[in-house]
Image (cartoon, rainbow, N blue to C red; front, side):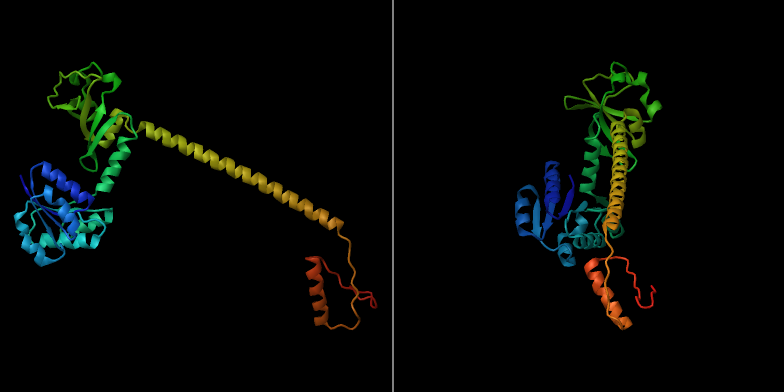
Length: 305
């Protein structure tokens, strides 16, 4: 049994409190929201309303007496960072802080956190792997490179013993236990015979697990197929647009030719003796009623253009 300080009683903090209570630990819960504190009182040893960024308040809790200090403040990273830093300054033995993003994790680790948990990221990783492969029943991340998978026994392994398959040498993975009807059996020996009624708890590197159980093979094939289909669709759409544009330009060219052929020349007689500015003004008015047309100016007296 350990003495735990839990700061932050949102959904994540409340769930941690429930689990700690089931494990029989003594929990001091803290939040600045009175309603949350009252809700958590039945399942923790003690609870207080207070500001975790206040040094005097934290001192009054006796930080050095707790085995673990868990900071689960959500939605206010500034408070979470200040609380984490103060806990370490006041002699906390182990500080575990919640981070919602990778950049938050870096700041927390630099400012007093011994460990960082990212529930949203961890659950997202679990769900992505768990529900994109038929073989996986469960998944626990050990570190960035290793994991424990609960997997179905491959068809080719059924009826064979662990020693006969020589899995550790061939794939560099370890069968830690077998599971049947919800019960785990840790007594795995080279003589253990695998059946289709059990699942395996295997530990290894992601790369080796993928190679052994083809965990992401179906997903990779599907992704490649979707990429090919998408590229073909883009190519077909681009080709279609090119044809339509070519037709539009050709029809527009023909329409212009027909319009030019059907246009009759217009003749406008200007009074003799107009200045250049007056002539330009007349041209401007002519264009307003006739659009863009070719204009030829001629002097009837001098017979020049």
